[in-house]
Image 1 (cartoon, rainbow, N blue to C red):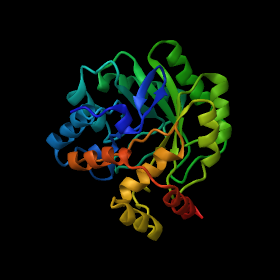
Image 2 (image 1 turned 60 degrees about the horizontal axis):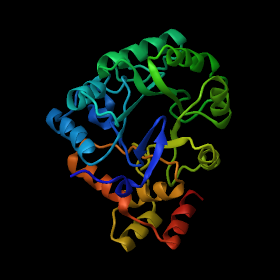
Image 3 (image 1 turned 90 degrees about the vertical axis):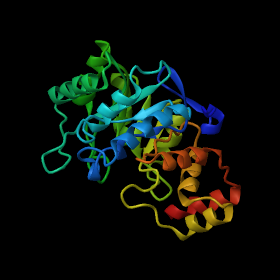
Length: 289
């Protein structure tokens, strides 16, 4: 049974479409370390189909997940795509033979990656493409004009509908917006990593979506006594509380928690119905120090 947008944290605009605020991140559908095929292909396909059945309309992917694995799964599971489904991909990296993530950000690299995403997703135009910059530790200061201009040209050609940026600082967001409109920013942000507080608020004022990646801390999950205690008091899981905190943080926050399990997916969706009382929010706000 499809979950209503109100049960998925309400909705917010992502480009020209309104999407429920709880989406799905496909990264974990690939093998260990996001490399190689899934451990259980049938379960991976079931996760994607269940996500859409539950009302999720925002799926995040990248052709370098696997590489190619998540896009191929998305196409197999969901094509032909619903008109109201927004598939967001990103460019700016590739995978080496050892599973590393070397940058690939020359304009010609980005053009090739866009075409790779088009081919493997089986579409004539990509809904949203995020330019992924920075490094594993976060944004790296400096201009992103050459890279973003290359994507803006592909948007003018009709190969991309909307643009976003990822792993960037406030100055790079501003620079991108002088080149072409953006509909989302995808950065590291969660209870324990609050460096983007000002960015979240600025984007909310501009009605631009903010999409936190690693909402639960990433490969090193958030460990906090306060989080554990708040969750116990609410008879909820720490994961549900961390996701609910993000939804209550700002109306422009769109979640993309990932999982390779249908049961875990249902748990993530259920987190959207959890309302945190003011005293719980205050305790959680203090986690970042």
